Length: 70
Image (tube, rainbow, N blue to C red; front, side, top):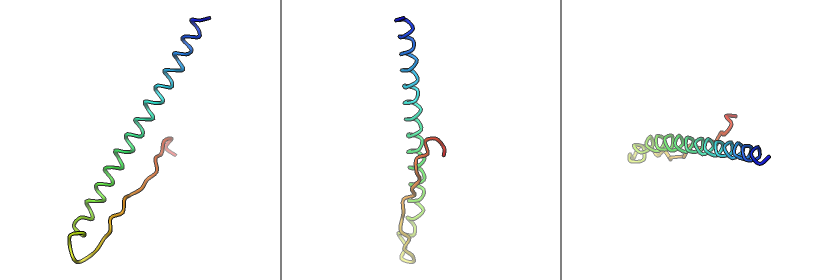
């Protein structure tokens, strides 16, 4: 009985560790994508900010984290 319980606990622990790993990977990829989009959006406004002709304010693009690709 002890051997069966130990292997069951190990299986549950491995599943939990894999969920944690894939969840943190998803968050990392989301953060990386947001940083790229944010930087591109910011750089697009720099020429307008330096000229006297027009004033275009920079707005940070917001996008929700889609964990389950909803």
